[in-house]
Amino acid sequence: QVQLVESGGGLVQSGGSLRLSCVVSGSGFSIHTMAWYRQPPGKEREFVAHITARGNLNVVDSVKDRFTISRENAKNIIYLQMNSLKPEDTAVYFCNVLTRSLGVYWGQGTQVTVSS
Image (cartoon, rainbow, N blue to C red):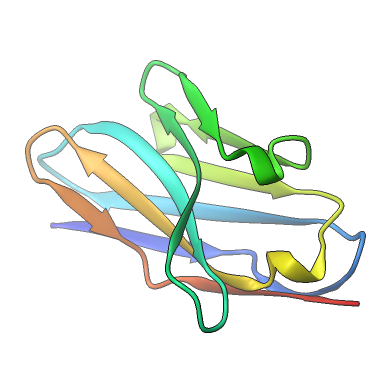
């Protein structure tokens, strides 16, 4: 069983910063890729960023100069540092893990609200 727990969301003013964390726990698996997605109010879930076990990164263009994804491989933790937040970044942010043998898992999500 693989479990993901996100934390770090909250309410912040426009221009502020937040750092999201996602801790992956369980046994009997190895991780290929960890990612962040978000779902704005009334919209579909969308990709934000991912990082592979080898450290390869991919960040969506709309946040590339403001968000940074990083990972502590030994602890199966990923972070999303979000700077210069805008109201349009308001969403539920989800952690996602692609394992090599057990498939894909999602966290429960953490709410990020950016006020103008």
